Image 1 (cartoon, helix red, strand yellow):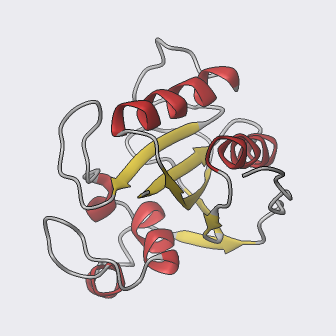
Image 2 (image 1 turned 180 degrees about the vertical axis):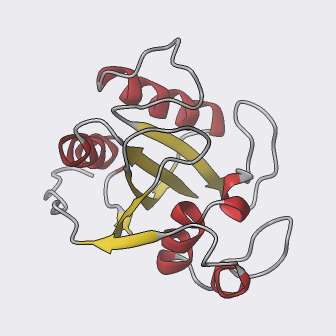
Length: 169
């Protein structure tokens, strides 16, 4: 079983799509480890504030299959296949880590946003503090502690979701 970490974000009907995204991820992966919810400004464009969090799961799916499942969930939740990179979105699911894999395809693993964005690094450090970045070879807790936390403001919020009880998972 591979350990995966997924960044989930939304800035269109945020609460609705965060809950729907978590429900769909639980359906696809079973038991989830879910960080706190964070509000943060859009990065890379002017747009509505995002809700972001990080989800951990274990899966027997291949890296390619996980990437496809995440895209399918995005599309099922109103994301256009032609969506511009820096734009508002109902649901954004980015595969951050797949075990200690380093890859460029079908997705960049580990995702470079881990080291660049507070809304990714902070919740990842929250749920996987001792896990080490496969390239930087530092724990996520250490990386977050060294991060310029004043550079991007994030605010922790209550998470409006409860893990469903899954049968046959």
